[in-house]
Image 1 (cartoon, rainbow, N blue to C red):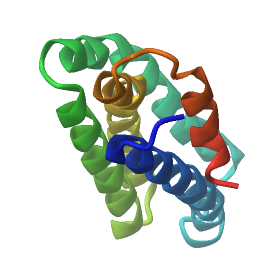
Image 2: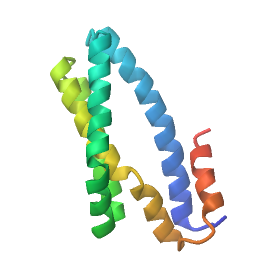
Image 3: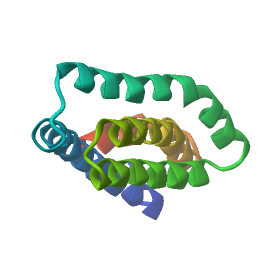
Length: 140
């Protein structure tokens, strides 16, 4: 294990993001059912929009992160995820929530893998197996 500031930032990032995502996913479903009045089909469609956008943009955003900046990719991703959540709460109707899930999915692809690659670059890349296993556990 290392004591570099980047490692501490990684642990905080991994722990806080895991906790907040779990909380937001639960609240989102309640919001969609109780406030937006979604039926089962609408819930499936917005979930499909999220997964399809994630599938389609995973490779292009990964290439962008590798060519430009992994740190910038993480920042862009977190901003898009935040924008997606903001749009979803702005108007409780199907179209806005559907589009917000597309934005969220694209944002997720910017962070997917870029955060681990970024911390690997910061820490030098060797002997990080234990460090990576600590990240997800920091949320507990």
